[in-house]
Image (cartoon, rainbow, N blue to C red):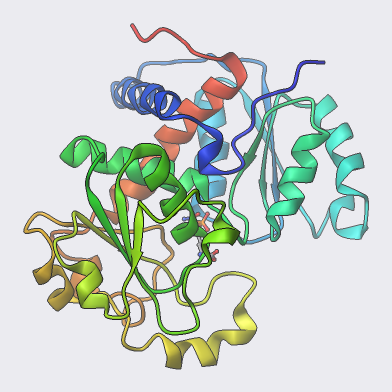
Length: 308
Ligand code: CP
Ligand code: NVA
């Protein structure tokens, strides 16, 4: 058995592979917009395992797989044996003998790594406590669509140093841009947990306005991620001064893009005037999950395909 290629962290792929994927995403999106059928994954099956809630990730993977000519099976912890203590390694053996590709959304990154180690087919991380690589794939494609290459640009991350933030940090190393991060005290990035090679591509700021100064993208996420609900009250107090508002956009580049992976809480991490305002590209980001993940599914199942 040859070892399949997986997408478990953003830095599993090289800059060259991302260049290919972004070009492919563009082609697949254009074809879809012209209502042209494209079925490279005819007869193939994606298994999706969800241990946490989802709207966008489920829709984009399930819809994307159908649009590519394949089918998708949804499993969750509640009504499968996965929630009743079957070892991850056993589940990986069985599921990967009955499918062509697997996507997992779970708590610990270790679970997707253990699953992948025993899988005969490619495994995609659909969000863990540590990373959300599919989100940043779509977000960077969104930036490229609107502004061109992200190399040398500055992304300001305001708020919690969570899974989405960690993935921006990995992407900055792979694609050579910079992330300015501002978190409340006690919520700073822990570089050793994020698997970074150094500090050349990020800088931490106590003041969120300083982090936002001159940025090409300002982005944030909920103050309380899934799995951390018990800390919600404490986090509401700690993060109160880390809201992305109009004043923050004014210190960034005039054509700054506001991004948010969604779901969002208006009045907490972002003001309504920012998320619903002219700099916001949140709906494009959400839509591009579909197109970018179709390119990812095609790449992992079929390898590189020559773009016509
Ligand atoms: N952004 C994102 O992953 O959304 P869902 O939780 O709805 O899948
Ligand atoms: N950081 C958020 C992202 C949701 C898509 C969470 O993990 O809940």
